[in-house]
Length: 538
Ligand code: FAD
Image 1 (tube, helix red, strand yellow):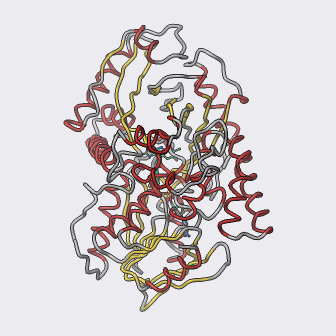
Image 2 (tube, protein in one colour):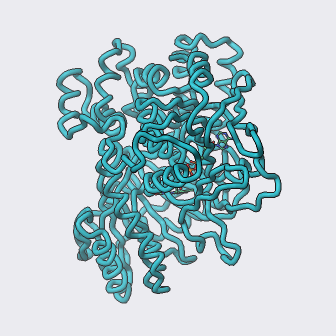
Image 3 (cartoon, rainbow, N blue to C red):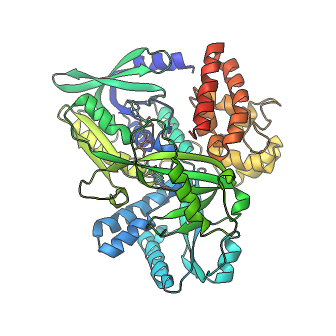
């Protein structure tokens, strides 16, 4: 379906039971929950799905080791419950999106003897809270075992290590898979469509006014209920409803940098529990590179936040203590920044002290806002939001109970570990390509290869397993509208190697121009967006 048809369909299907604003983890998860309960849903996103915070996370599915530390230090029951809930959701996510999420070994290297009992017992407690859903048993590693499992780490003064387990996932593709799963259950989904106002009837919100960001065409979409799931932007939307509304959020930025695997060729991740300013730092294997993050700096709201020099320096400086080889700016292959939507606590002096819990609030005119939380708990947030919406709006859902606990996400239905070998045999593709396609598309991977000619089966860039065929697939099956949608979210190229993404942008634009009938002017605009986003680091 092309964009014009999609917009027409979006208008024709109105009125909706629910319109959900925001296509990040929260909005896509909420749309899927609503569609799976049999509600008539529309999901609208001002940029691309997951273009906000939800493609800029550390990509960990976790209970939150750091919250656990707080729980122990403050003997705070709420924090324990938060960790337990995160661990429960971790298990569900790893099962329901098993092509996009997997177990990851993490190791904390220990450089002083007195740390060992503290860290080890903390991680044992993490296992205990996960109960039967734990992903493995945490254990103490000898110095030599730690060095063997973490090649590239600084050996000087190393005493031991502690091994534990969490999950790792592909955030941008999970958000998209949630939106597409909702679509397959009847939801209307549309990206690059910005909500600019609300429709009102008798003082109650009765729909949204949304503007197509390509043509400026305004759409009026009616609904029984409207949900504001705009993450860091939620106060902006609340302001459109009620200019006097007090802010619910503060935002802080967190950046990541990506290095070549040669700097840290470990298959396990490195978890630094406490930097000298008290933060947690990770160096994780991801898409055949090393992902390092993150920072925590108070930040202004922006659609495209950029990593600050001081944030990059911070990561390089702190990581230098843990890696054997020194790092320089030139070693960075990609960097990006994301904004944390943090539920405000006026008494907290530091954003790292704010609790990452979600909040659901209804305004006097009936706008339901859901914000806060973390990626790992998107499903529970959506469940709570829908339960709340069913109490708030006059909705006749086929199913009043949540159905997402055991709902396989698109790509996971027929996914099995044999799929990689099957792709290699059936389509004669290289092992790294088969592996990459399976991990990103799950049981949809054969579709990409089935409909592709010889050129389509070529690599988009010689150093990465991304294929030209994915460009066609993402246009026709995944709502990609811009070249940067393909480079930064349908494929991970821009997030792992910005130079390769710049080099590939011309090919992406030429294929999209042909398929979507772009004018020369549109191609120039796409070129400018790609270059400026990639140069400024997304
Ligand atoms: P967003 O992803 O920002 O989505 C909101 C969307 O609303 C945006 O796409 C925006 O464009 C859209 N929008 C705004 N205004 C409008 C409008 N007017 N009309 C239409 N659409 C609009 N969590 C984990 O579980 N694991 C991690 O490892 C992890 N790491 C993190 C690392 C960092 C640096 C950060 C910042 C967060 C991390 N998180 C992690 C938290 C997690 O990423 C966020 O909680 C989650 O992505 C928030 O999703 P969201 O949908 O609420 O917000």
